[in-house]
Image (cartoon, rainbow over all chains, first blue to last red; front, side):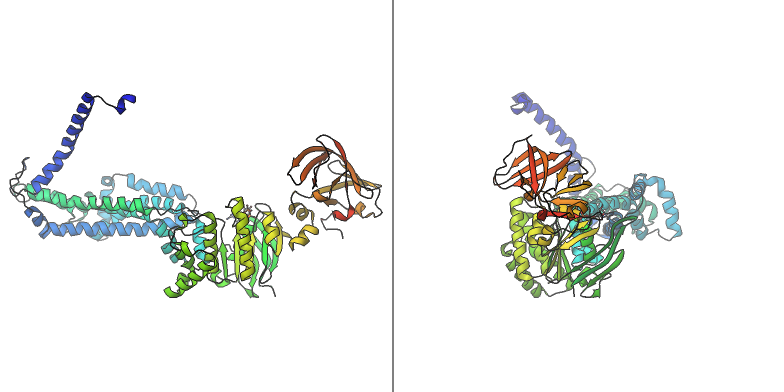
Length: 275
Length: 355
Ligand SMILES: Nc1ncnc2c1ncn2[C@@H]1O[C@H](COP(=O)(O)OP(=O)(O)OP(=O)(O)O)[C@@H](O)[C@H]1O
Ligand SMILES: [Mg+2]
């Protein structure tokens, strides 16, 4: 690949053209989204706004759509917390105890997640109706259930890498099981816990199907469903509102991505006993 | 009364019995070393004492009080692991102070006591580092600091030096000995290394297959091993052990086919021995009158500078001789070997030492 080191000018130009085309293809929907959202006279066509204003954002951050933003946040946070907490409590014994067929068990649970959600939506809906769980609580529960198998599998593998000697050392120093978990096991699994938390958060934030089927009113919807319901709600489609809504909807995912990235790069304090 | 007494310890892992019946008394202030071949149950015994393994049957008494069901902390025991088991996410001072924090000591007290320990172990400048930023010897010292900060009555070590290189091992060995003589904390120490055992111990327990073969001072173990296993285990190079298959007048034949004559000896004690042991340094090439004598062929000579280890064979019997001057023989030469009766260790059929 000597030629690759010093490309000819013709080659440089064609490569740049190609990259430029890729950028346009990638960025045009993005730029359309942003331009429309700040254009007070947005019409849905691709045009540079004559005036920039944040009024669409202000509309989104009030009334029903604000309510939906909060719903999304509540559902995603609750799912993330519940998934992480339950996964911890389940994964630790799976990692430390001799349970016959434990790997088989875990992998068959993971099958749950591989099934398309659509395939189980009817039993979930019927069960929810019988148990009176056709509300945000029910959505959190089912999303947690869907997340758990992988979360447990991942966390169990993480716990497996923590040498039991560390726990034995803490035990000899007087640590109870709870203290051992809080001071030794969990801090050393920070990266794993972060992955699970964020995975559960984003999947709940992005989830459309379960809240759509299980929730009844505008006031209960999270943003994923709210966006869909807002289409054509006021007779004509309000593109300014919808684009601002989309951007606000997407923002936490992006934020979470950066948080995750920082946590993963600084989170590995090193697990080995010998350091 | 002994500080720690193990009475008729028995340990099963599921259906496998690892320790059948073991008793040992550890005196206050002693440095007790457990040695034995790999898998003989040294770590298991240590972990039973520490409280990391249940005692299947038997009693553990500390200060005369039954301690089987006490939490390790209540036993007044701390332990240093082979891998040190330092908490990677805590600084050195947090590592040392962790046990105190669990006890609910005040911040000021923890700081004070961690500081004292750090001074004693020369860890002063390292207190803010993480274990990953320490050298092997420093980690070792932190592990010791963590073990002593709670002022335990007994410290257990499980092969603490085996991760270090040879030079550091010697240094740490000396540090540990100094530490023990300064603080006098009762210590139980597991090792593979004979030199460690011989130099550090006040008493050594030689274990085999979950049993204690002999529990004695290093000198006694070396000079008067009570059974052939201990005789072969302690000392390097290994003691020569001849298993007698038949005695014919004033000659005896070993199972491996060496013929040893004891014609010049007045005593007939040798005639009763089932196993005769003699250390390589007591086997002389040439031999003198009044010694046990036999012929052997030189197989290999290891020259170590100040001494030579000569490996010989007679029949299929392998013999090792150690000469502190240059060995006066060549490979494949037939030589006469001799050793004095006073230097032999004799054991009867049951493996008991003959007086
Ligand atoms: N948790 C366990 N389950 C089953 N068997 C075990 C367990 N721990 C130890 N053993 C067995 O008990 C025996 C004694 O083990 P132990 O670790 O005490 O030996 P050791 O003398 O410390 O050996 P080494 O010098 O290699 O460390 C071994 O045969 C080992 O296989
Ligand atoms: Mg061991």
